[in-house]
Image 1 (cartoon, rainbow, N blue to C red):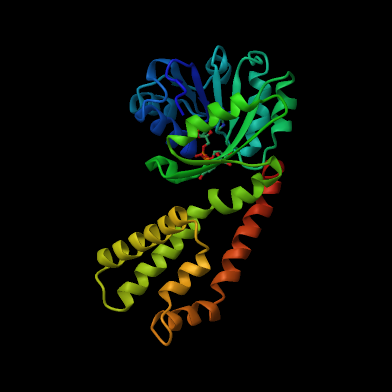
Image 2 (cartoon, rainbow, N blue to C red; image 1 turned 180 degrees about the vertical axis):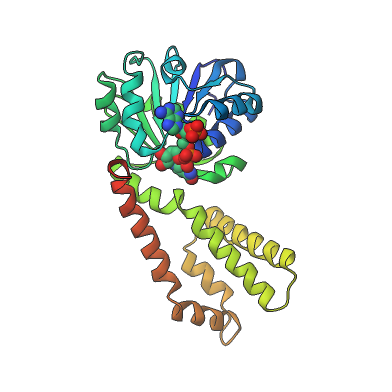
Length: 275
Ligand SMILES: NC(=O)c1ccc[n+]([C@@H]2O[C@H](COP(=O)([O-])OP(=O)(O)OC[C@H]3O[C@@H](n4cnc5c(N)ncnc54)[C@H](OP(=O)(O)O)[C@@H]3O)[C@@H](O)[C@H]2O)c1
């Protein structure tokens, strides 16, 4: 994207699973520099451990971390976002960009807690960002402009693909691409298990399942062809694949996956307001 962010002061509030993945990946790819990046967590021992591991200052003081930061990532649990935003309210300024990855929490709630016209971008990444093959959807709050979205896109583009959506779609994105890796791991695990059942060594079965998943996904992304069309090309009349597909249909794989995404998206709507 050509944006130079390496000199920017960046704070990551809540360097847990996703915050840690983003921090590590952005530092490794050189988009953030360790001399101008800091982070926070809740527990002192974890802060000490992360300071050693990431070679950046990690503490438990959100106000100190957010003060003078140009970009503030908010990576705490949805239920904690309001509290953390109210904490940093006194040091937050409209020159900063707040990027929240919290599921379920609308930009309006963050803007309201910060109590001034601070640009907020909401992002929904997923764990494959750790290896640069993530998927992140982005939307902007009331005070963010195209430049803020460009900055956030530049950050998340180094850890995978990005797409800009309307905020009304963020819970759906959460149910599909943020939770999605878990669904795919279950499918992969099951395919590998099936390989073992038909006599393959487990490592070979896992390789076949994973590379097949990657291959199919790559074809969809690179050709833009409809998955149904691609499926038809594998399905020879009276061949083996159609027998396999009949089992999938009988086991209601399609409707089960649809229901999984619908349920997760519904849960995403309520997360910020529950336990
Ligand atoms: N995991 C995913 O795949 C994923 C994907 C997209 C979005 N998200 C969103 O990312 C957020 C974090 O999820 P996660 O899975 O990364 O959870 P997590 O591993 O539990 O991370 C939460 C982090 O927040 C820290 N924390 C808690 N209270 C804090 C406070 N008051 N001030 C500063 N730090 C505080 C915790 O500190 P300690 O380590 O000391 O406990 C922990 O490091 C959630 O809002 C979630 O919706 C997650």
